[in-house]
Length: 65
Image 1: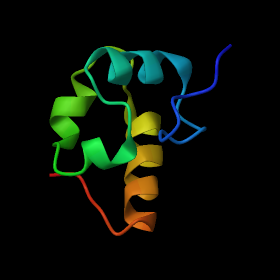
Image 2: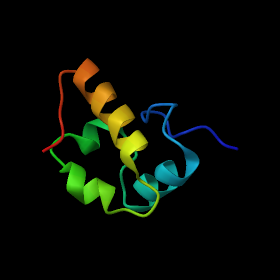
Image 3: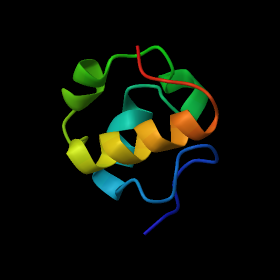
C-alpha cells in the first residue's frame, strides 16, 4: 500500500486517495472551495474520507465550498 500524495491526510483510505488523485486533487489546498457533494460523488470517497478532509482543512483555516 502506498502512502497518500504529499498533502493529503494519512487517514484517507486508498480508494478515496485514488479517486481524488484521478480527479486531479493532489493537495489539500486544492479541495478548499470544492463542495462536499462534488467530492462525495467520486467513487471511493465516502463519509469517513470527507470527515477527515474537512477536519484537515479546518486545521489550516480552510473549508469546503
